[in-house]
Image (cartoon, rainbow, N blue to C red):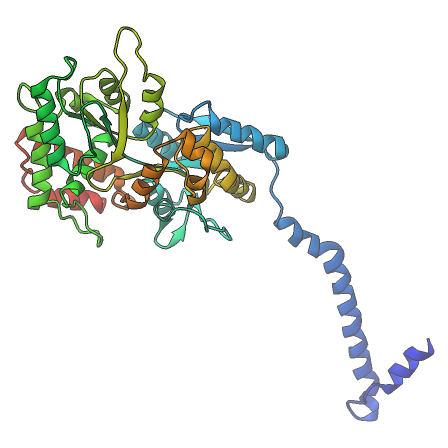
Amino acid sequence: MRWLRRVWAALPRLGPPGVVWANRSWLAMGVAVGIVLTILFTSGVQPLFRESAEWEKGKLIVLSGRDQSEGGQRRALINQWNAEHPEQPAEIVELPSEADGQRSEMVARAREKAENADVYNLDVTWTAEFAQSGYLRPLSTVDTSGFLRRPLESCRYQGVLWALPFNTDAGLLFYRKDIVKEDPLGLDDIATTSTRALRAAPDARLTAGYTGQFADYEGLTVNALELIWAEKGDVVDDTGKVVVDSDRTRRALRWLADGLKGQNPVVLPDSRAQNEQLSTQAFRDGKVVFMRNWPVAHRTLRGNQGESAGRPGIDFEVAQLPGPSVLGGQNLAISAKSTKPRAAQALIEFLTGPRSQQLLFERGGLAATRGIVYQDSRVATEHPYARILLKAVEDARLRPVTPYYSRFSDEFRAVVRYALDHDGALPEGAEESLTRALQGR
């Protein structure tokens, strides 16, 4: 201990002789306190900080719509996660298949006081509403490199990242190769080809030229927006202003309204009551030359491409729509009420990672949100439309971003229904009513 006494004696005398011992005592106390704090931090406090970075234990509930991936690939990914993370098992709770029903159920559960979900699988149009309402927890320290720009854009609201893109989507134009010899360029080309085919009657099953989803649900909003964009019109511009009252918008609505008329209509009259499944069936039955639909229809049509039940097979091809597609898809977000946010974020990053995205597209048929997946040779072989779909996603546009999107969509469909019944004319005060809906008034 001699060395300690020498160090002690060498300490500077910071005051008069009567104060030397006091100064040394304070110094000794400071050294002792420092040692104690170091021990406490090492043995007690530091593990607390380390533990905060670990995932919470317990089941993770994912609220989602029905799994439309081929072979239930979403559940296969969840099973893989569960095998690798037995202390954080995940379970998908499926909600009604229609998007409107899913949103209503998710909102109802989000408003409940009890914790009933950790992850929401949201339609791309719901991010703003759920974020604004306080239903979501922002994501932090997430590597977003590699995601396609448009799908990732749908995950942000007011500059904050609230979700990661699970799967994306873009509408495509399906057409019969035996009738259409080259890709149509615009709505007028579709009308001209349809009229010519109906007059020539190459197939007795033909009753119209074109079909889409014009029933009174979100499909009508999507289809109407795409037709308006094809004519270079708009409904809400980049600044958030409603600009529906224009010649280009009326031209698109008039194309649709006029196309529904006549003995040999350009647009299938039944399409006013059709959703995606019924449109696919009409195309498969040979009733139309063209169909607007999501890529999932490709899988259905390819599976029924040969002759069956006495019906000749349909030889078809796909192209991009005449204008930009509406961006579709779903995003994964953390519930604000989740008591396992770190584990929930880890699950989201797993499901949206490159390998999971490749499996969802390659085996499940759901469009990937990462660009690298489209470069895979097997994906290109299994899904020959992948290159066209990637371009459609890159060119796609988001629907108006607003917490009141559901209200806006309802009002917009009312405007479109009026236009279809009045030769493409807009109802009086259309811009004012859409503006109020867009702002939640």
